[in-house]
Image (tube, rainbow, N blue to C red; front, side, top):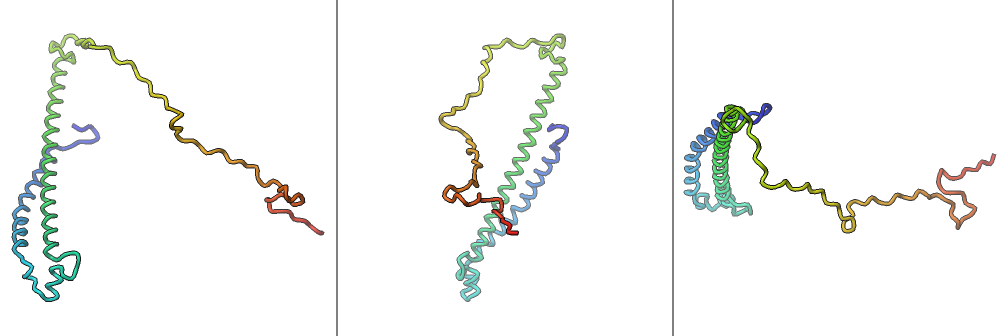
Amino acid sequence: MAGASFQIDLEEVESAAKLIRSMLDDLAEPANHLEAVVKQVQKSVYGSDLLGKSLTGGSSSVGGVDVHQQQVLEGIRSYLTNSGAMAANLLQMVESHRLTDGQNSQDLDKILKDGGSGSGSGSSPASPPPPSSPPPAPVSAPTPIKDKDPGYVPPAAPTLDYNHPNPLFPGRPPVGGGGSHHSEI
């Protein structure tokens, strides 16, 4: 199916997709029950003392337990929805691959039965159909426009003529090379 070095086991993928779908069905009832319980809890249950205020988010800007429970429920619903879509995509992929493999198998069987002729007689190869119009002439690559966009322009090479004697100080030795060292011995 996918080549000699990479094989997709369609039965394994289909089995995994069905297992995912089964697990999602198992999780749907507990998720519904959890959502019903969370919706039954009112803020008044937490009380009005300091602990109750902190649980309802009265002492914080991030929200209370009820807000976080709603976020968790949204996350659970999102997970269930995305996992269901993934299982459906896997099953669709398996079906698509099977249809393609079946079509390829039929085409190969037809070629083998026809002897590669395509005519069904198996005796002589079929000639290719005449072209309906002459093939288009090859198109050369466009030449770049040098006036508008020069592209990369390398910088100018540096000049290396430095450390010459300064004409303002004629008696001074040239700069560089460690300077002049006079020996008075």
